[in-house]
Image 1: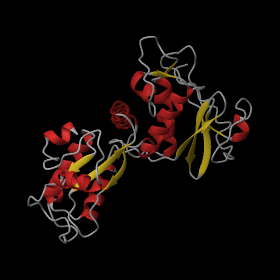
Image 2: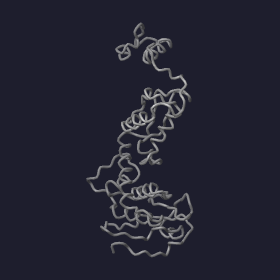
Image 3: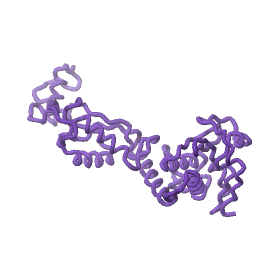
Image 4: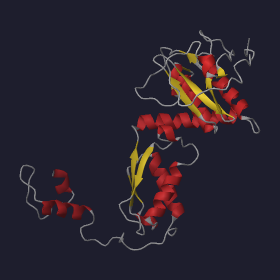
Amino acid sequence: VNWASSNGLTDGLSFTAKADCPRSDVVYCLWKQMGGGETVQDPSQGVPAGSGDLEGARSAIEASLLDMETAIDVSAFGVESGALLDLAEDIVNVENFYEPFTGYYGVTGLWCLEEAGQAAQTLYVGYGNTPESIQQQRDIVVKAWEILDETVEPGMSDYEIAKALHDYVVLNTAYGFPSDVPRPTAVYSGYFSLLWGCGVCTDYAMAYQLLMDMAGIPCGMVTNASHAWNIVQLDGEWYHVDTTWDDPTPNREGYVRYDYFLKSDSYMSQDHFDYESEHPCTSTKYDNANLPDRGA
């Protein structure tokens, strides 16, 4: 009530914090907050789709999303609400967007109050987590693109990409957490493995999944009561990849094993138990590949 009074919203009203407030007074406060009869742009005015300052709206939305604003004023751009929502969706799906973990901007919802055909006044945004957590996700997506630029070369086959990214995760992650590594309560895909160079099985698996997904190769994660690893799709067949168990413990710099690279269900059943996989891995094509250890 003090705030409303100091901002002129209750001028002409006499209610107090301890008294009843009729609906008419609430409507009056809202009316005052929204302009109180001042001349404003009429959002009901028809606006053709594709008209208005789309580039100006794009710049304003991008800057506001980085600052995690929840209500972005777009009234100055004269863009029809449906077109504006399409533009906003395009922005959050640009390069560095990674859907399974709410994306680079951390956006989970976008909406306007104006109907189709009306000029958008405000773009409302929902975010999937705290600013700290979303910044972690932004950092890891940027790092993942740097890794792909360094690791994946033009013309590489899906097999070669899968192997190169397997090697990267193994070579650049040491199992466990040193005492000087901070551990936030909420972390996302590959955060420790790719940014801190350490982690446990879920960090290995999530890092590999992130890199493979961003490289355009289908990849999932498999878990049981005590372990996590991946499945990947190559040439229409699914295979197991366990980067954690291909990394010797204690850590040996420059050393990579391939004991659990592109293996079948039958192969993994020797020492991986009680797991459920979204896709069966029936191909035994690589079970006897016997790739030599790297760095041996």
